[in-house]
Image (cartoon, one colour):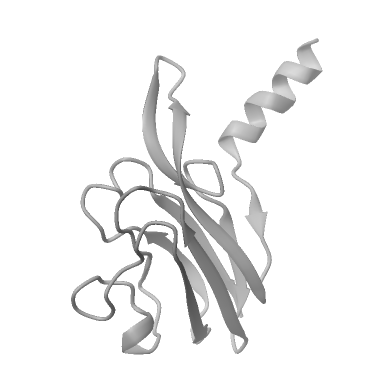
Length: 137
């Protein structure tokens, strides 16, 4: 019983990891359990924070983002050097991702480090729409 509880608890602290290459992200309504209360929020692939995205310097990535919300969304790749049209800022670098649509981000990974990704639409980021990026040399 203790082992099962500990495993479940650790899975809440350590979000899923995704490997580089091509993969899919969904933007979803989620329940966020703070330990003190449960709140409605927005997450990626059913969780907040979203998955840890791991890349290697020099590779190209393709990320298909499907918007399961009833409002526009976006993903901004905070701190990454990438083409302007892949920056994920609605109304500036691209129009945004409409409800029910999928947008594909494609860009080269140019610098090692630890970064994060988050929505640049409305108040989605403070509602839980964020995740980590780890880029290895």
